[in-house]
Image 1 (cartoon, rainbow, N blue to C red):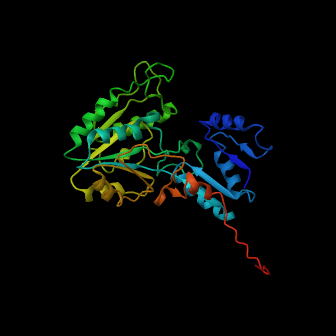
Image 2: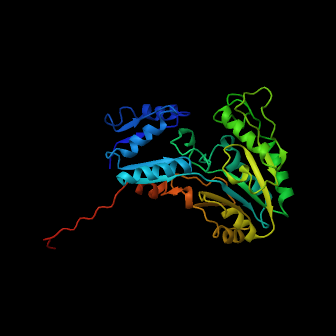
Image 3: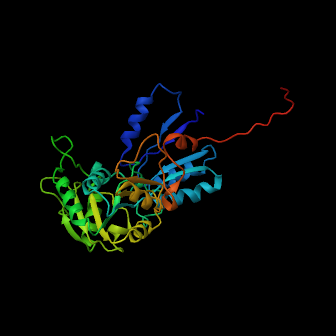
Length: 333
């Protein structure tokens, strides 16, 4: 309805929002599109001011579950319309009926694009303040790989072959397929989780990389990851495949649904088989034999603690609209 918008970007990525504002310069009246950047230290008071302002009728946030809960509580005071796209921890199931090459292609799409930074980056045990570093790309990469025991060797082999064709390096260098993480601290966090996981590192895991700065982390596969490991329990925002095997569909579904997140899941197998399993997964989005599930025309969002509402398509537009009923009396037809 032409309502003005305030865009609050992460302090790690303000330039993209500012570039959007520059593109829109002159297309809208002054004050319709506003970009409000801040430092990390000022993130919480800026967020509080936006939540408390009665002029703000709706708030949409993409980021961590911890920050989403903070916003949910804060917005209750003014009963704002709230849309939250929060943390994931997406399971990727390779069923007994799966074609391992199809599964490996889907895994590469969802796990390694943008160096594994294509999901809402969130730690469920993270800080409960408005942390702009928790606001990341609106997509959803796989974080927990559950592979049928009969398929695990072939699946890992297929992944290894594909990973070997992903050179890590600077984005301006010819042939580079994997770039850096958002900052060196993010790479150090990924490395710490891999080292402390208790699993077997099959590929990668060596950090820092020779000749590259500390923000670069190699594609990595870790097998037999314990269920209580942070690498399994929490979403890891990097190019790491934590992997476990299963024997039955019931076991796979139980492991996939374990936890408070419900953003996206992936299921690879014969269509009828994968469909039957996908119906039992408690997630807002399920990719069946497909790793690229995001589409501007489709409703994007999760269940459980992964958010409220949907982005994308007509459902996403509805988040910014209110139904209004006019009952007209005295009308003759």
